[in-house]
Amino acid sequence: MQNIEEIYVQYANALYKYLFCLTGNKDLSEDLTQETFAIAVKEINKFKGNCKIFVWLCQIAKHLWYKELKKGKRYPSISMDELTQELSTLESTEDIICKNDEQFKLLNDIKHLDEESRKIIYLRMFYNLNFIEISKILDKTPNWARVTFYRAKQKIKEVNENGKENRM
Image (cartoon, rainbow, N blue to C red; front, side, top):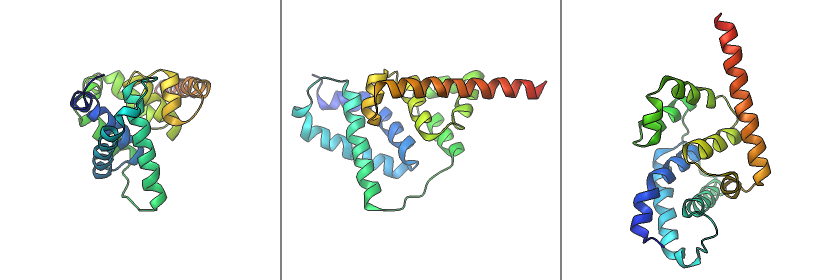
């Protein structure tokens, strides 16, 4: 088992991005990231190792976000353009991908998907999680995650094909 400092260094940025996708708020995402790791430190002995540690952290983070929502607080949200901009400015895989025009177009296509599809696409493509891990994070079945991912890919493909026809 890694120590908590190594875990923090390895996953803090990815966890922040996950929370930012959920909340659309930089400050809240930072607070929830810190709170997630505070809980992880206290509860690390309860981690059974039956999933990746990142999946476990995402579950903690998601439940903290739900707690915030139940409090009924209003947080300023941002548009999908601002969300894409924020995610693309963070130092990580997204920075490298956004340099490629095709990948940048993909990010623009993803923003037209419904929220559940966007989450699955981000978790699958940018965090390389499998459908079982995604299903645990989103409290759904692996089959639901697989089907939703497939449908999201089909919708992106349709948008691209229709866009090409309209350009001709």
